Structure formats: structure tokens, C-alpha cells
Image (cartoon, rainbow, N blue to C red; front, side, top):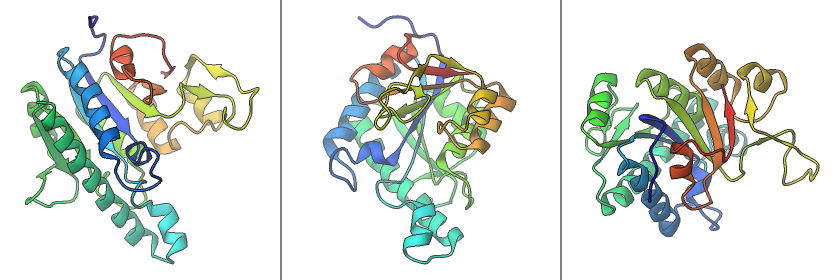
Length: 239
């Protein structure tokens, strides 16, 4: 039995790598369907859900510019287009779950997605539609973390939920350093001063200016999106 949500409107930040599952590349249909089922669970609780999805499972701009000797802006635009592929896959999975969904893009492509307009996005949320924001900010040199901070601020989300493969923020990489300690709460300035790799510095600074908390939690544990929405202490809160 689902409890009562402590957040009315959330922005869920999904990495592209999460969608690839164990494949190492591309989109794992079962993983995508599993995420959609978790999102439906909180949507059915009355929570307004917006999603920013990355593209690293297909193409990552900062790495692509080095590997393929591409101009950084060209590589970043390729990375933004990769997020569109992920967004469409997630939309399909959500609609299979019965969740009305809109994909909104920062780069205009009217045949497959709506152009992003803040007022229209808010109206979709009020009408109980989930939104997937794709194509980052529409500008090169900005990450999808920054896009998440920007969109969350614009739609006045209560929280950014950064879904990762670990159960919070640690003093070091827990996969490498077994002595790494987990933080339950952090201040924005702590994240910046300690150079903790939560989100990039631009995104953290934007959240700090907007007083927008960030919750970092493990997406791979089934039901964790619901637990996060209910306010369970399952990760790290930056505020």
C-alpha cells in the first residue's frame, strides 16, 4: 500500500547509462519498462512527474569530441540528439503503462516532440501528464545535469531526484574505496568545496540559487522512486 507523497511535483534525472542495463550500449527494453513501472507507481499517487534523460548510452558529447576529433559543439549536439532517442523509448514504455506522456524538446523537431515552452509544460503537469525533457538545454557546453537544474527551476519542482547506481553520495567512490563513508545530508557549498561528483558545478550552483533540494538515490532497487517520493531516508539530500 502506497503511503502519502511528501512532494507534489518532482523532476527525475535519469542517466542514459541507466537505460542500457547490462548491455553496455543502447536501450535495454526490459530496463526501460521497469523504470516506466516505477514512474507509474508515483504518478498514480498524484505526484506530477517531469523527467530529464541523458544520452550517454548512445553518445556522450565530451568524450565524442576527443575520440572522433569532433568540434565540441558538434559532439554536444550529437549527444543532445541521443537524449531524444532515449526520451521516445521512455515515452513508449510509459504509455504502455497507461501514463499519458509528452516529450518536450529544446531543439525543435515538431514531427516527433513538442517544442519546450514553460507554461505549456506546467499545463501538461497540471493535466496529469508526465513530461520527458530532451535535447538538454538546446545549447552545447551544458550537461543534462544542468538541463535538469534549469527545467526543475522553471517548472518550480519541489525536488530534483537524481537516480544513480549507488545509494547516495559518498566521501569517495564506494566501488573503489571500501572505507568511503555515505553522507545522509549535505549543503550545496559542501558539495562544491569538496568537489563531490554529484552533478556538475553549474547545476549545483543553479540549485543553490533556486533553493532546490537534490535527492541522490539508487534507482536499481525496485520501488525506490516511490520510497523517495514518500520521504524515506534512502539516499542523500543536498539542500
